[in-house]
Image (cartoon, rainbow, N blue to C red):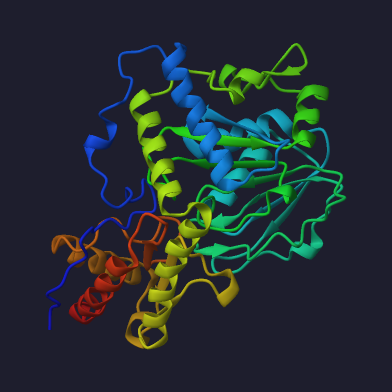
Length: 380
């Protein structure tokens, strides 16, 4: 039987993600549009986004945090182009975005002393093989594989190289030990459901020292430059952004951060996200046609919840037929207005990817699951 109850909010996209509960355009009424982002009041708004981010995440006091262009991609590339090359590099990848960073360092930066630690979708690389005398690049959460690192215990305190962490689908939903990271990046459009285009970058004192003492062999575009005259450009981390930001996006980011504070900060955000994973986990445990893409319970992402279809008749199909069927399932539910944009990423194994970040209500996730059962039966 087709279910009758639908999620109140059918937004399960993994980016841009669902807005916070209760959001409407009215939240942007106070946006300082038509104003220079360099002026006193708009700059104060930008500074407030930075300060609230630092406070909610409880960043170490000697770290700096700033807003940079081009979402998380821009932030990661800024870090790699500015910092890599001073040492050898160990780089980790277990899904498409991590693999993209591998391509960048091999084909674009053309680094030669590179050790690659890679794993198939569903697994993590062997972190014990990483050489921390080198710099290390890794993603905290595989957005397209649903596989996260359970913790950062594998990173030593006395490392010689820098650790650069792409944490875009982890920040504000997972308990990250920032002391183990020298660079952390994310975008507003993920866990906080903000508007796209702007990224955030956090630097440790060790990362700042590298920036001020090392000049890469390649030219740096203007939007990647974090130093001038051999010194960190402090303004980037005090609201003087490298390029023009959207004050509508700034207002929206601030609205999300205010909401986060109102519900109890980081612990509440993590709890909301983990509630989504529990709802899905309980359903998977009693459902014979679906399973997590992540092979181990401790590595299951609570934000990008990736699932694979394991029914025997489906497994007997060709890869092309499996992809077609998985897309049909997503389309069936989309046509009902129940859930949007929850198909697996184009480079990932065919299946389902449900966003379970803090802005998604677990009650809505629970209402979606019977529809998945219905749609799967319709595929036959």
